[in-house]
Length: 347
Ligand SMILES: [Zn+2]
Ligand SMILES: [Zn+2]
Ligand SMILES: [Zn+2]
Image 1 (cartoon, rainbow, N blue to C red):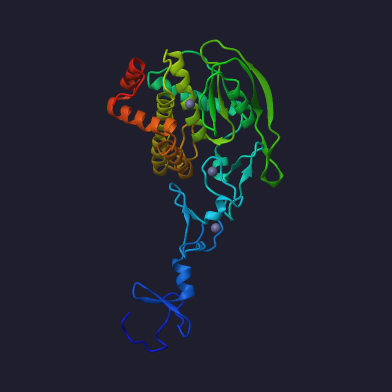
Image 2 (cartoon, rainbow, N blue to C red):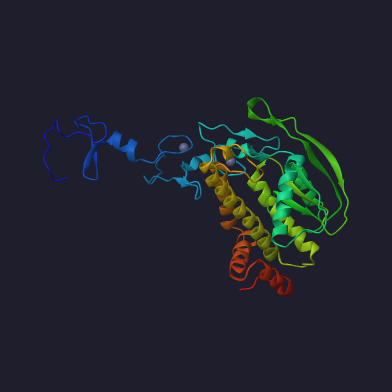
């Protein structure tokens, strides 16, 4: 600082107490007690609220989530800290998560709009079908949709002759005849924040056309459930419209494009009605099926879009990025015509 100080004037910039014999730190030409400096500038963990420890080389190694911009101690990846299966955020000390009976953890924000049983999911399924109609892509057959537990989804996946999917599969477009256990009654919140009392019943699925049914994992937020439905309905549309032998990358890529487009349409309509609700007090309480989305839900929707955009796999990630480029450049209709003729995205 290049200046001489009277001992009594040499005070910490944050607690204003004199700095006597302990060490001090300088920041922007202002002096601080070492401890006050640490309190101000040493990064704290968003999960455990402690200072993020230094590693063996004396550097602060902190991990961060690229979308949520939360930073945390690397140790939480291994120490059993719970992670929301939907939004990927880690459980903080001040937030309580719930555990679904298939072991998945859910944060309360995601639980807030979670879709829990097949009948509750029907209006959303109709919304997605309307979305396809609006794109001039009406699904001509009635395709049943069932909400299922993780185990039922995996069993159905095993029963399919050919399907390429992710380890964390959340939806499935069935082509074979199967018996699937569907969730017929929503679970409730029990002791210890465990979800219990779920009721399932077997349903025999027979094939009327090339698609038997669409299955979706239960307990995910509405916008996530909807984007999975849009993805699976696009698989159905492709099959019902004679798109055969597409590579995994092209098929999954274009399905992800539809999921992303639906999320976009929801986020736009959500913020539009938010604006409307600020101008008149009465509309705030009338929440239609596409009613005002809370800021929280909009943020979650943006996260689901980000998840699609940044997906690391070559099938889903690169497939989406190539498909999205093509749709932005040539439009959805022309892109689909090109895929049908060549099996590839136009470049
Ligand atoms: Zn921590
Ligand atoms: Zn969450
Ligand atoms: Zn798929």
